Length: 68
Image 1 (cartoon, rainbow, N blue to C red):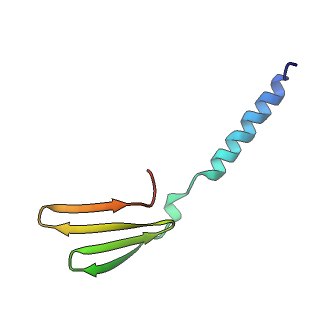
Image 2: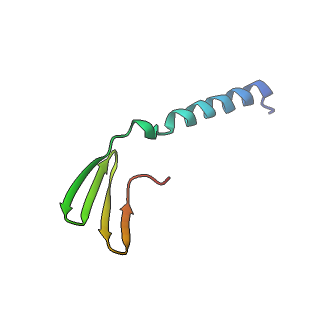
Image 3: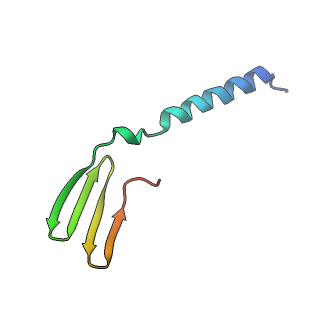
């Protein structure tokens, strides 16, 4: 059985619309900083926590929030 092209186009359009809705708008996310010690901070946001350790050699950051 062959599927008409208009059905394939409709399915592609629906999949595109669903993908667009699933994307996160990162500009609307608010992040709160918390100082735990002189050189240790956490950044709390939607879905995760970022740990930040500062020192004379630089900054070490562990990000568990967003893949990008």
